[in-house]
Image (cartoon, rainbow, N blue to C red; front, side):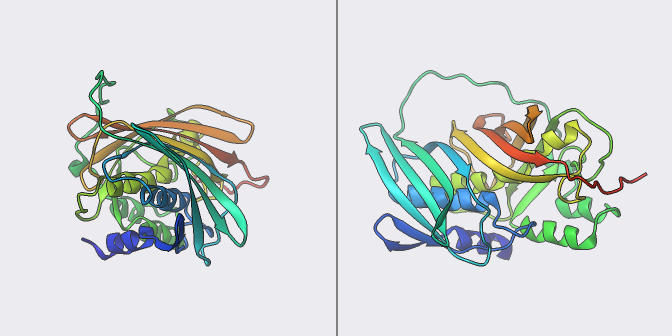
Length: 295
């Protein structure tokens, strides 16, 4: 296991300070606030700690209410909404400085046999043939070196490989609002199913709005031509998967309007099983004074 992955697992391993109350630490991300994927993952950990191990998570729905302060801990309060024969429901509120910054509802279900179908996995190149994040980022001479280092540090726990150029790699020309990314953790994980769901939740907030930017030839915060933030986030966990094995994150954007952009995605295992569906809406604002684009 890489040290970066161990540091991430330590970050997600919450301290229980009272029944149904947990505390998590924070750290700076690539922007000067807490990374939304961290808060979502920690909230899911808090919810999962109050649920029997034989009931894996099958969905979550969340709202990002305020920017998180990376210099302060986050307190997660779990409300045990329902414990039924098949389903368990939890509500989690994340609080900093006396104010809620994040709200999550999560549902867990005991295993059942039932109807079975899925949409086929789209075509994508083998992840081992694609450049790593470091190889791509080191090649982008138009990016500020400090931005590159922040990107690499923030994503060091995950091997994340774009199938095509990311928005900040080739911006200035609109492209199809579709992006594909392969990802897996940089090291093996324990067999706990909740851990793999939590890690996928963490990664799911990294690239989902890329497709919105592609449609308009925008590079995002990395080049300063868009101001953005996650607004809400939903995930459905269809089938078991491992976050330490290659997963294809196939993302697209059907709409952008009113300063908001919508991203929707499916996550597939390398052998073609549909594991997760994801939808997120984010704030996507164009600054009044735009930076010059590369010629």
